[in-house]
Image (cartoon, rainbow, N blue to C red; front, side, top):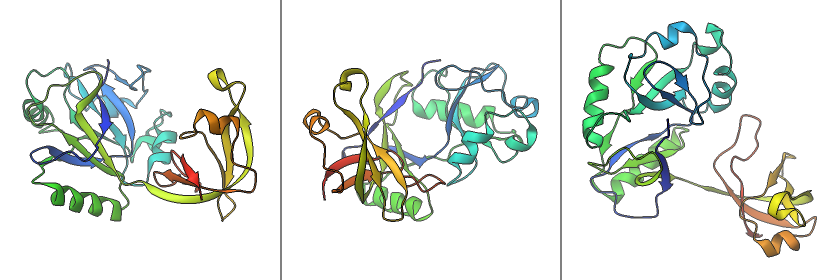
Length: 249
């Protein structure tokens, strides 16, 4: 099943768009009979988990166990024992095969999951009344350890592609790190570096590959130099998530 993917929000007026929390989980598709990842690999959930999902109705959502649990969900969903799955829920935000706009699909979800006592639940949506409303919701989610906001265009169809009707709003963090080495490139970057090996002030090391221009890959920042990068919070091990080079500090 091809899935609908989000584009980044670039400051357009969010008034009237539907808002929900951007959940930091593992994307999961239910085709009415089996659960798969977005790439089509089957997810071998316990029978008790699968039995609670509606037969013959396609669902789009994420396996989620609460804010800050991405690493544990990643480890747990690959196992089939019930104990590993106990904290995992299925946060459903769309019904791909239901005809009509986003609101029609939400009404369908409310119906098929109305009496569900299992792990699946419908992600709460509400319409945004303007920029200040979006700012306040985003700030509250971030303060609580969440990742961001998803915006969905009212009346929009489910498009199995990266769509401008689905936008993600995330607060990106800046940080600095010291360059301590390089990793060789592959593919089109075979003759240059693939990434910078960087170290945070607390000693944590990680790689930065995103954001590097072709010229910088050919002549990278010197070892010992300090660089500024952006990232989306940290993993449980304290490693910056999705680091991207910005500039020499």
